[in-house]
Length: 303
Ligand SMILES: C[S@@+](CC[C@H](N)C(=O)[O-])C[C@H]1O[C@@H](n2cnc3c(N)ncnc32)[C@H](O)[C@@H]1O
Image 1 (cartoon, rainbow, N blue to C red):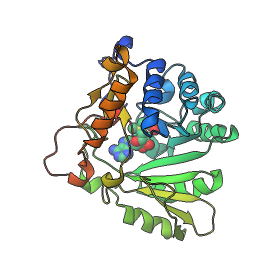
Image 2: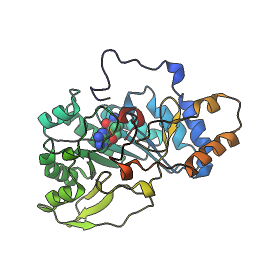
Image 3: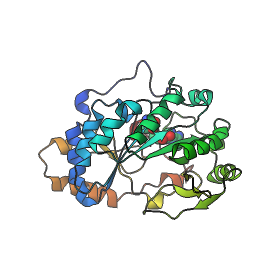
Image 4: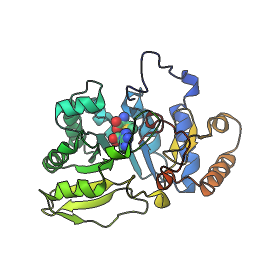
């Protein structure tokens, strides 16, 4: 969690208000027939949840789930990589906004070391996990890191993705002036590395993908602010306490914990989620700046 959200007085939820691993996997198993194919464990920091590889094991065994990923800050990745790979994880996304330790510290503020994250990335690859790196670019903060990150992606054999800085939650003091648009990120990369555009590999893909012209690395840009992609969004989010959200920017979720803990048949849950999904109207990013209501924090809903 960012420092603005987490502090000494932070009230953790009582354990019984958090979905158990069995409940999470029961939900996925029940909903898989509706077309859920891809699962991403995010947060908060998913590697802080004790026994996370047990959850990976349960989810990877579900029929129909063919892509199981995790998004992590990478700090504990070296420690967990082998168990995650053995449990059936398909791939890892690591958030790394800068290679320069001072810039990284200023952005992340939790005393994490770049070297430790790099060791996590290498360990994950050693255990056969493909790695993507996410870097959120903020004006005047880490634009200078774009080229070093691309060079690192070539050396480490990872996919590099740059994300436009978004106005998630109510605490990050976001301002449009802080956003580095996709066009500027591309211009910076192309000053050293010519790029070739790649076709999307699947519907709803959020990143515009490119390959360095020398073939050495893949680059993706997620232009959620300057070119929102609400129309193609296929993501349903589940919070740790059992709320489903149909948009990253939604203010409110829809409770499934009661249904999971009650006697309702699976069909009731499927009907509830089907109608929630088919009736959703969220398209926050396309309506940005038009008096939208307060939103949930990203540390609660995941990126
Ligand atoms: C919220 S984090 C949670 C998972 C994990 N703790 C981590 O650090 O990767 C998920 C992703 O959201 C991205 N993210 C966080 N704040 C963002 C913002 N304001 N705009 C765009 N992306 C953001 C992060 O870079 C990260 O890749």
